[in-house]
Length: 443
Image (spheres, one colour):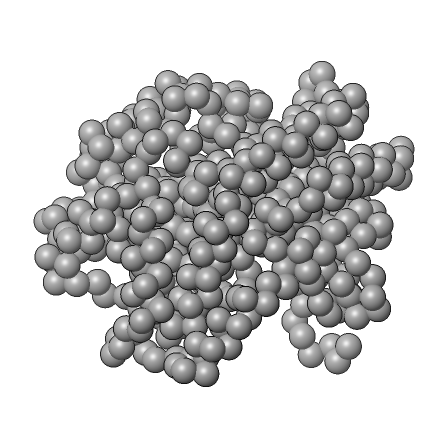
């Protein structure tokens, strides 16, 4: 290659992706890779869908771009109405952007704008959780509680505050900043709001089920209703980060649907266009939207917000998800995948926990199952697992630092919802083989 690309890949010469179909990516040399990660837990409807490409081309031929401050467009208005039927909110209004980080930044500004419109100018404090991930722009990174990603940029961070992770597997362990009961977590958030001054807190932001930071960790039973009650009691806006969990990834349209919670603001991206176009949005409930409008509007915007072609692609992906019942497929196939993983890995000495919902499944790796002690970070266990799996044509996703902010290894699985039963078995077998080989390399 030319060497002019500032690459994300750790390898100096990554393979060239040449084509893709279903759950498979093919490189320029003709080698096939089973995409058990959906890229970065992005692809839901599968790779290579001609109908999406056709919609994209047709819209680009009509109107590829028109600035959102001057025009709206038919595909955007149509999509907003259609997706609104699926959002767990009353009369939502969406603000479309180019991805998850932009959507989080938009949601934070929405919360501020709403509080200003309410006459609550002192509400500037925002809480999130340790071991969360909300994006890589500076505001989104500051909101995030994932220490390995924060560490290089700490001198630029510090605006937002954090409470404990909802992480029962490591609750109470030194460095984990985790609690394991809904009651304790709700009491902690309540106390943090009171300490900050209830009239000073604008919003609380959290992932319904934590993604790569912790590896598909669900909160303890009762957590989300209790957290929603705390926020309502103090006039704090509840923001659900559904960038990874939205659009069927957990076997429901949105992660909060599992607990019947209706947030004030919801953030989505990834699965909204299944990777076919850079897209995301922040959705405000009807009440929040009306409040912001009553305060004189929303001071915000991006060059590529309200993009017509993005909306057309999102609309077609939404149609496919509905027409092919892929959200239900995610739930069923996720249960199949977990059963296969338990069969292959329950006896593995380096596997501490298998968890998740739908086709968002995490495997936490440990050095000692009895004590849950992680491998030290210099061992680079999960990187070795991913390398070996990739060499055998299996693509996985990973997270690190989950145990104490430095140590800890997570494998996260999030294949397309069209994955077949035989391919699910290949994922489970391939992960077992890669983990065996990686542990042997470290011995």
